[in-house]
Length: 372
Ligand code: SF4
Ligand code: SF4
Figure 1 (cartoon, rainbow, N blue to C red):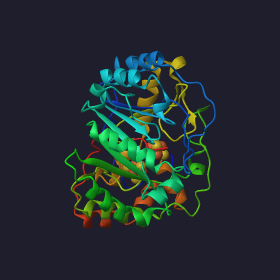
Figure 2 (cartoon, helix red, strand yellow; figure 1 turned 90 degrees about the vertical axis):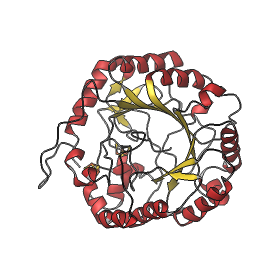
Figure 3 (cartoon, rainbow, N blue to C red; figure 1 turned 180 degrees about the vertical axis):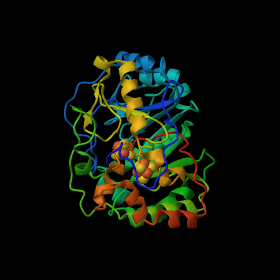
């Protein structure tokens, strides 16, 4: 999809949500290192330079001086391999309304985040878990025990948690029963746990995306035959919202994987500071070290102004939170379609979501980066 192309039959867009008052999001891959080798991780595990804490805090501060920051997401690789994670997290919270740390939970939590940081109500720790133990271990390198030790420790210590599952044909049918069991297991009086899912990424669909410069590359894998149909994804979304969970909170506002780019302008950084506006794109627009915050924000505003989402019925009716690339993380071309609107149409999303009886709202935390 050409992001700037006019869309036949769709009225002109409202004024673009750009400019100095519009909050942005930052998605920072602190490292490509990780102890795990998950089957469907798109992070290429190859050595890459990493900005140090002082460089990240300078980058965040430079952007925050010019633009409010709604959310910073610290990811990887595995961000807990960074010994300076607490310092970066604390600095991020000084400038952003919310902070998220995305982890596979493979390293013990221990004292890596001091209590006042771990229990800050603006911090969410998002842990990737992909189903019951045999399925999770098969997909996520045998990490079930470590991940659930991490989750248990974080819950006991009062952290705000979200689970995130990558759905493929290998776990789709197990998800609902597994969540029902988790919901019962979480009835221990601790705070509710959030839940979201993403559909498996098709790396081949994203390989050419982004700006003119290379960033940290995507790791390819054979996704063919593993990505659920659009109908199945909408069906799962509807089913989860129809469930009466007591201790799990389904926080997802759109059926198809996405970063919510239409709601909040997001900048995604690789570990060396290379940036793009699609967190899954292996190509970028520059490096924060060379470009600086003003030029980065000017580029972001230009891209946001060209985004067609605010002219789209799916966006207006809260069925889709937007996407820079029109690929919805590969779902568009994986479904044999050339247009993201056709992806939503093909799934009968209007009817399926209407039947769910759910009131769709804006994304509660802005854009959320897909787990890797
Ligand atoms: S939704 Fe679109 S812009 Fe966002 S991460 Fe996925 S492909 Fe990139
Ligand atoms: S379907 Fe979604 S990503 Fe595509 S134009 Fe509409 S709002 Fe944007």
